[in-house]
Length: 279
Image (cartoon, rainbow, N blue to C red):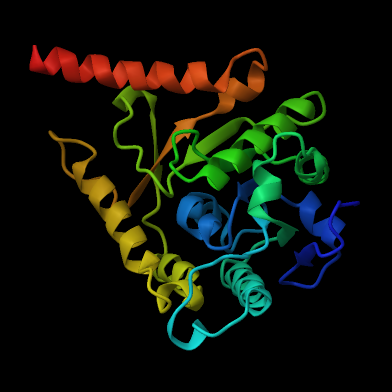
């Protein structure tokens, strides 16, 4: 495999060759930052954990620069913080029993530059090697610009390789905006109740963020619990934890479909539902 950055980091927890590890992949998550994977794609991690016929692979686009820091990390330089974040992501891959963890090392500015095709080509390289059945991306309604940019580059890559590999399902997942507003028939409710100890450990291992002032561990668990309880108003809870996702598969299958039109169509359905109830 050839990537555009010489600083790309390939970590295989069981020590096999990266190409062999990627070839095992059934579930793939492409995220913007370290710890996004563990928040948005625990469904895939849990589906694969301890299995020999299913394997989870994580891809992080950015290098961790500019991360907020306090406490013992307060005096870290940006270069030192990048190293901390890279190691934390490796730890998560080990805890989650990933096939391989890929960290591509781009800056946020590079990711958000639509003219920069290097990231798209790197995603294509991973997709061709992995040929995943299920892909987890950021959702297009996320409020973090870097998340949305990574999602757009990921969709471009998926469309480019769809003649060679086409996942049966592509999910747009929650991080910086919940998806409980989606109409229920458009909502992908992903059960994430399994192995709550592993789920907690995966988010908790990012100490630079948690003890640095962002309680992602508590917030992520709380959101999943709230989704499980508030998902159905007239039924008992079937899961103790749920994540919601947007189905992005149509955007891969039909490259003529504009992302904005697809997402705003769902927003319009939400608006119509509110208007109908108020009426």
